[in-house]
Image (cartoon, rainbow, N blue to C red; front, side):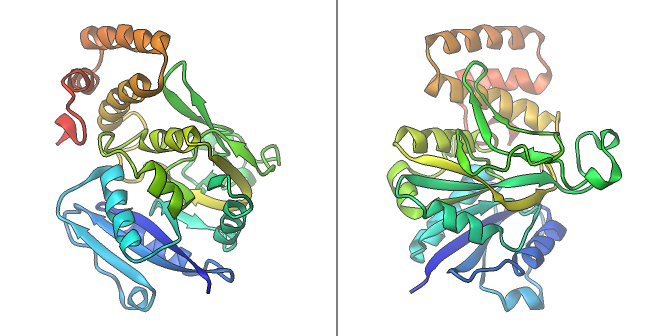
Length: 304
């Protein structure tokens, strides 16, 4: 009997992206496994509705009247997938489209060793959505890295996308161990989530993927970057883009949370000093983020 992958994606006021996602994912090859899709309509102003073609696919639609964030929304989908006896979870953004073989490649990689918990693809910026569009030749668009493996920077309590903004010339074409997967897209074994837990709801948005990856690697598992699996990402389609007030709040607060959980004394002291500087000289939402961290106001926090 074929194994089952449950594909989980969130819809948050992004109906067009979700319809395009479902159209793209329906073309993905799946010879060696079966799959179903769970869409979590995560507090959207208007309820998401499947069209006639989508109703013919194996799609389950879950409605949350409240925005549960990336962590809570995905946890809602993961819980439903567990109830329905899945074998694997694919967490993936709805603002992506996909090479037809990407999921077969991830499936092959995650099953190549018992020690491997997660497989993550090569991710390009969607054509025309690069950070620095004027930097590239026309033929290079759609071949600019958004993610080619993840690096955990414990000096700054952040994760870094290897290769970001570089044009793909084959420099990251090796299947290899990486330090951190991105929540944009990763395939994980069910039994690993049973052991280490789901996303931590305290994060709500940003660095919840880094936290999960730390728990996975601390449990002795490997995360593998597979460049044979390729998808394209329309960056920050539902979060206001880079440098927004939303990012100011959640990245500032969650860096503190992540660093104090996993960092050594030196990092914690550095974050404390930085937090004092932000309280006096930071932007509005950065100041609120620091206040909420010390008040232990997590989840949606003051953003809600």
